Length: 491
Ligand SMILES: Cc1cc2nc3c(=O)[nH]c(=O)nc-3n(C[C@H](O)[C@H](O)[C@H](O)COP(=O)(O)OP(=O)(O)OC[C@H]3O[C@@H](n4cnc5c(N)ncnc54)[C@H](O)[C@@H]3O)c2cc1C
Image (cartoon, rainbow, N blue to C red):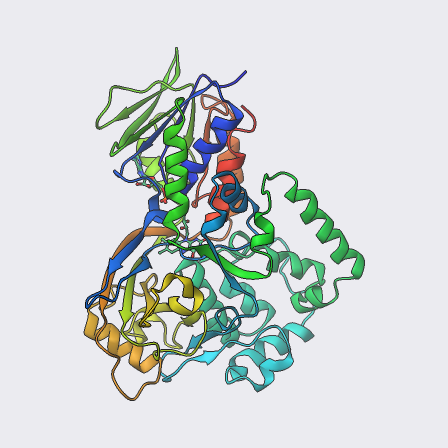
């Protein structure tokens, strides 16, 4: 029987996609979305159009997510169902924005191109950091200690390769996705493919990657095709065919806005924005009782929590605690958008990542995790006529309280980009302070989430509360939308 009334806590992308999919699956159920902020969309609603001085027009800037991966079928499905195909802007795999990704090593001016998976790395300026890792990885056999079910990304890369490669490449990769310390992040939760390839290659990841037989590749392709059948994607996959990443002409906010518009038109969905949930209790008659700071108590039969795990921990009854809601830390990030009045700021490319310095984070006073070259990646977002250049500087994470004042950030950029002359005065600057915005799954996360799921399916909870979102599975937009599609399957 369809649930009588589903309450969705949190109106970020996870909550909105849950409402969208649940309302399709249970058209007769009442759905209430409760969101603390006035605006729906959470981190994915941080798109702004800024007006540039001197009649230069306006540009789109992103304070939150900026790129999507074509492999996320759940997002392609939403694009199809919400009619967003015409807004999609792709970055082809063949373009410099896809091919050129750089790395800055603190203490050395300049940025270096990260080579692809080929022997070309032997000519790369980064070869001294890469060679030890690749060589050891190739010659070492199975060395995973018995009983180890997970470990940090850094420990994994050190065990399979070399500590220098782990510190330089591993830390930079983790900065780019999780804004976190690779010594803390669970390799199985964040990069499950690496763990699988190690098993497949009987210890050797590269061997596992290079020795996939024709049959295995064929089987993988078939599995992908089978998986695609679960999604209504229309012709959208063709749109993103050959793309490394994509976004929307008016920025990532397009997705959250279209979802909000769609759910708000549905007469069975009630949206309580600007409303904070303060308690979730059991109610013998109705199932649950939700207390908020604005409304009368809400009495749903089923609940989806699309909140961060610590936020959920604050509202559940003391008598019925749930395990592991506060185990993982999360990263805070300062994102700074800069718009410059010239196109000669950086080489064509996606941007650069900064690795952890040899003497740990305190040795890098810049506190920069990475910089995206937004104009190369999404040319269509810049206005026509006079060219301007957009960059986004991501700071913070494991760096404690970096100096985010403009002259300091510009001086660091000048050093990173190895420019003799200072950078020109930006036409526009926007600073976003995101507190605890990306969770860091610690080793053992997958096992702990399994136990949380078990606890939710038993006793008083009885499977009527589902906990999803960036804190539970992956943090990407694709993972969040997927969890919204799959929620409540057992109801
Ligand atoms: C700076 C940044 C850059 C990123 N870049 C990318 C990228 O390029 N590509 C990509 O795929 N992903 C990226 N991500 C990750 C992705 O954007 C997020 O993981 C995703 O948007 C999280 O969605 P969510 O709905 O799970 O959580 P949230 O967006 O955090 O939504 C949770 C909602 O719950 C609300 N809430 C909290 N407490 C309460 C309460 N008590 N009562 C009611 N409501 C409450 C919050 O206000 C919020 O709106 C990025 C994230 C950040 C922060």
